[in-house]
Length: 109
Image 1 (cartoon, rainbow, N blue to C red):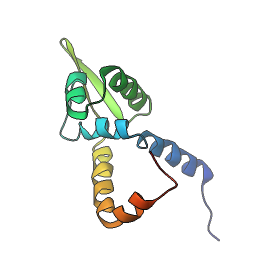
Image 2 (image 1 turned 180 degrees about the vertical axis):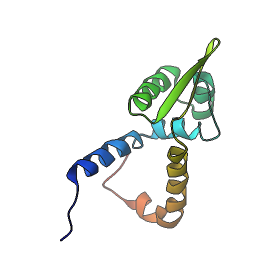
Image 3 (image 1 turned 180 degrees about the horizontal axis):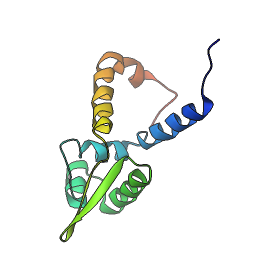
């Protein structure tokens, strides 16, 4: 008999909510190559500074991003290399299933 761990499923759903917003995804994508400042994130993503700051707060609270003060600047980076790997895996998966995702009417933005 297959037993599903509901608590684990709920935590996974909560994790994926961190990935479910286009702005948060673009912010995390900007960190794939290493630590960046808020200004660098704004420049790379086109997301406004207040929105970047709000999303960074959310991503930090969820444990997906960490920050470090260096002089006048705060640098943000992915908390774990597997976050970047998950983004890469999503890109690869989309290469195979993009048509279905594009045509999906259940998850529109």
